[in-house]
Image (tube, rainbow, N blue to C red; front, side, top):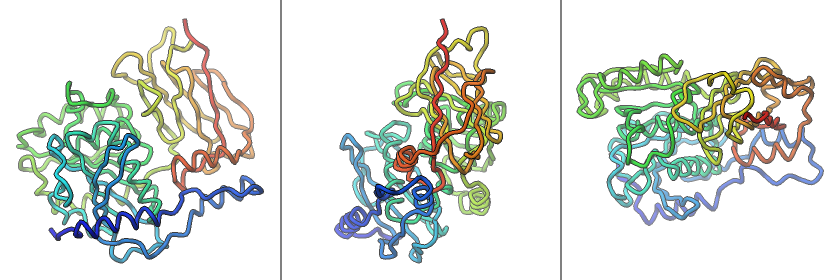
Length: 406
């Protein structure tokens, strides 16, 4: 493992990274119409070539001031005219204190480097676990910072994780899928997220895992999460329709097999870019202040709807006071099956819908919207600022309020 940049130089690099950030959404001129704004945002900014490269240690602070460390690794031959995949690598052993600078929280940088992509190796410790809201905010913030400096392929952002990091990757699949193309949990276990007393932020609903593919590896003699204990969960994954590849490796709780699996890992990554506007979304949540969105679907309000009477949810739910929406797009028609949801919003992209023709939304058997939508520049700018994503641009919102149940 090569030594990291000396800490003084690291601080300088951090200052440079922040100072050189390109605003993800340039200010709109007063006379710019929707079509011009849409094309400008789809084209994106011109990225600088004179940016830090190699291995850099940085920090970022959450809104509450909690500072997180991470290592950023940029190819030495980075070309600002290309869009680069990004891979996050979540480490294990998160119950330890903050180890301080140096990047030693990830043990083997050989498996991280050399894949012609930007790598991010963030830190989790006993004040901020992978399965807590602080880390969801942190990972999204890091991705935002990287996008502001480097030309990122928004549809090729991947989450790898080892041990606790593998469990953290499952958490992202359960709670926050929108930015990610695929999940690769190694020697982790989703059962950990069902444990009491480890600070897991919310409920884990299996149907949410159907929105992204998984590449899963576990050891046959792993003292913590042996294959025989993981298999029942994989059976559940199969039953609910999760798209996954599973590999059982000889050996225990380690990733010594990683080099021999590298070709399979890279083949999986190459074959699974994110579909920015999937035709089908299933999302389950028990809250609407966060974890309430999957791509073009946003759940705005939970509660009993009139259509819930005499019927069950379209998928299995983990607990009460939980809502689910299954939305399927076919041409300009969206068919919604919901339960425990009073309001939801559909985000309408010109890349997914024909805005010259009427749209129809059918919710629980009733037509709740029919007509053309008018592209709105303020809606476009709003979601472009949230997502910082040239491939997920929205022209309009269709908000649906369902009649209340008794």
